[in-house]
Length: 419
Image (cartoon, rainbow, N blue to C red; front, top):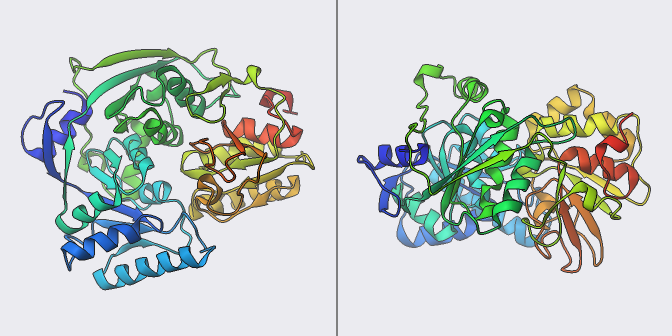
């Protein structure tokens, strides 16, 4: 059996098979300021009390601080629900983006089943958990019963080998894979990432890759925890490594497909408008003028991304015709970036530093695009109108490329600006 089948079998209490419909308990359910209110509205029609107020997490991250009356009302609904139900795991004061905050707070562990009313909940597969997004109505039933149903997904094994160069990152690997199999290439299937490159990859890179599994239609992205992941989770949960339920695939596990990728000579990858699978080598799009550059989001707002940007931006200035926005993914990351001098360097370069949150990624606030504007971003989606006006355009790239592009005012390979 593969890792996903094992986790679901453990929860079901028997050996499950792909295509089978199962109902299982969940270990953690999450919603944010954008999805909690509709979930709460449905929940209140079916129950007066949540199944377990210690297994629900609510995070404010999409429009924080509230930027409209509507978002303020949404957050008021959430606060009332948190108080009425005694939701202990609430992160509503700028702690950061849900998919970064939950692992930081020790709520994500290997072998767990985690659901969330956000499509990028698949991020937690980086820690060896089965995690997936769902709609607000489905989440309301989880809040009421602690259970949900799944069809056991078939799995694709994606074997990654080779060494990235100094200008590429995990973002380039996942964009390359998405470009290869397409935005619907793994619909309702597991994307299981493995191979020497994955085994040697740090927590941040693993989270980036699993985060974007949904962009190929996958039900979940997942990786067997490596030593660094186990150490991270152990420190955050205050559990010994031996106390964690680390699940691994059998050597004879069956997969729908096995795909191999060698990233040794991989160029920085750019997802071009208006689809995430419209991926090209940077050499094909260099020189494209940009109006806005964005470093942040649940995909690439982590400390390693800020470090990558710092190494490009230090002792440089951004182009006067470009605005550079930087949003750390969490308060913890923000504070560490301050301690390391990254934030000072960003400000000196001319960047605008925003509080942790999703903000411009979804066209919410702090960086909405106007008609005809072009943005290069470390976020996860470049759909038409995703970041503002339907006639704006979004390119996706790693943090090094975005930083270099901010300096030059056009899409630029980082090697061309490094001192």
